[in-house]
Length: 299
Image (cartoon, rainbow, N blue to C red; front, side, top):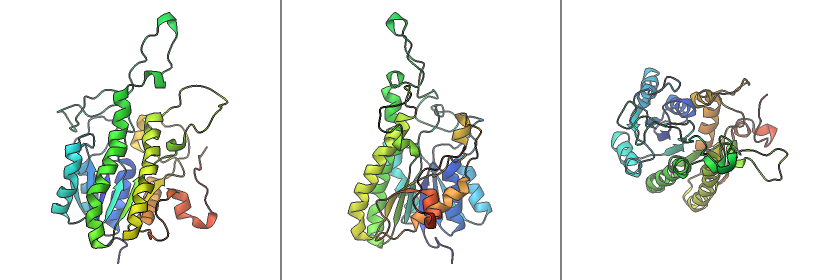
């Protein structure tokens, strides 16, 4: 038997990148997979992949999947996801919260790919400052509150709500697992003082991931009595994805998204009496004999 026979899994952000690789592996291991993403039609040539293309790929390989188009910024669409999955595939056994805002811009409202916001960068040009002082691009001082909220709506609030919606069925069935995908950005820039000073970088993205860590552990503490593991998984190495390429990925040796998907599968199969409420790194999961090594940046 395959490792996920008779399981139903939701994978969010599964139109491309890590989410697509996770959905494909879960289906190959026997799960019926609900592929959740907002992109139904490609809206930017730099961001290939749609929710329907992932389903087609799974079905071509002999797997079972259903497309669940949804924009996770919209609470009403989030609330409807689990009912749609239950109607198409049955009660959910595995939830992988992978969706995040990783690129500047969103599909045009009412245009190709859907979306609830106009296609424009989350970070606007820095505003002018009296006296000629220049605010660096990417600075906290120039980052709009709307953009900050958007990261949390997609990466944290949708994760919160989807966990609420799937857990009752998991408790009733006496089995289930939740894996929340995070990033080393949750730990950046770390404690100061700093050798160099400047914009902290992906503070909105990293901030919602850091909040996800606390949420995961709080939910895990409550769910352990029901035997349901709830964990965070982060890539030990930078993983090449369309989002990274969109943002101008550097010339380094990237890790395989398929390898990260294998680590996700291992965490999804975790025993709640041994592994729950953990902040895990992918290579530590795949190579436990080497001990906990955490983030392994490649050069």
